[in-house]
Image (cartoon, rainbow, N blue to C red; front, side, top):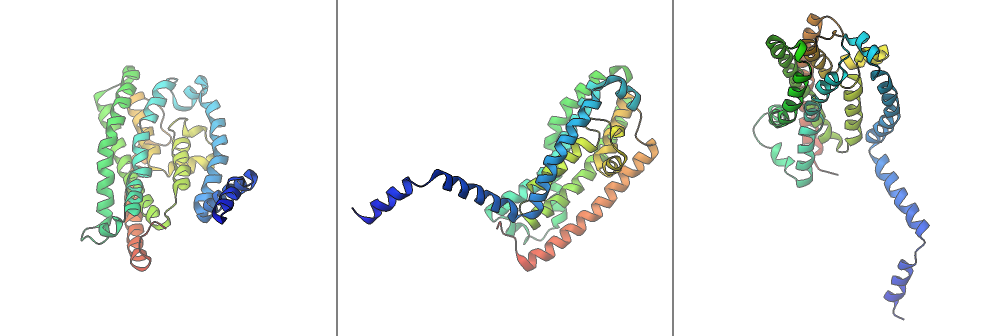
Length: 281
């Protein structure tokens, strides 16, 4: 019998357990190659159970009324979910674009063009925000319908203003995440962790006031927390987490601080790109 046929038979009759072991080992090597990604994947899994526990408290109508001053949980939930679109632009917008450019090799041309990389990233995030408004507007309108008893024209305008400042701050965060994508390549688990944090720590689904104090402090550092809180205050008449003036000031400071950090992160990225190059390896 020819050697090639013998070898083919041996391959076909390979031990399935050995193949399973090899497949598991290969996946483990892939996971642990990107250590930050691996670590955040474990953290996200652990925290997910904690988040489910918090949901059980949030559905208590009397507790909700005592905490935020309204028992209208449906409106509370709908206005929070409407921020999912803005959350997406910071996490997946520019980062997804750059992952595509890394795969196709277009990133080298992007970084060789004579324009500001910061404004290139922010402009693309802004374009994504315009597109994602198609998701926000219907949800926002449903929220307005559910809160018709407390609705005023002034409240709608001020609520939308708070939303826009929050979105502008998220765009800066998106620029930071985009630079992480280009620097570390595999950061999907890190984004998954932040996605969980955005949902559970900012008041999107449950009031921030129900969280333990350390988590409340973390949540108040995220841009959409006060954006959502002010939107609900102006539209639903809920209690704010802190005074209204401080929430506005904090939102504006977050926008300025994240803008500075984003510029510094992209500047650092440009320096390392010159030294190491940008390749999807």
